[in-house]
Image 1: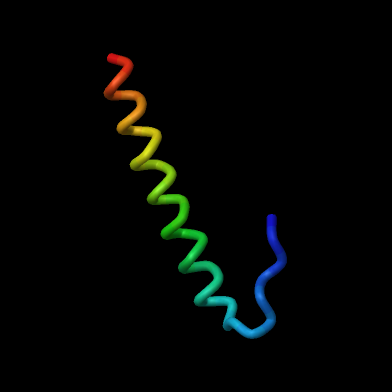
Image 2 (image 1 turned 135 degrees about the vertical axis):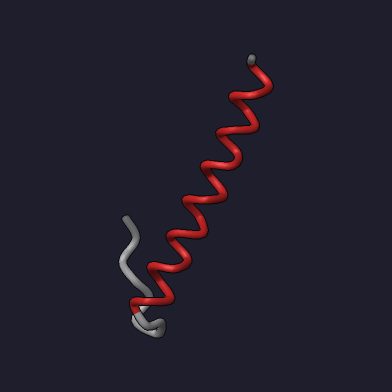
Length: 36
């Protein structure tokens, strides 16, 4: 895991991480549907 950017508040860092996880999950769902 990357260290939080000291310039950013932790809330911003966690929010970006959450957004990244959602994007990854959507991408995985698309790949899974294509295989079915």
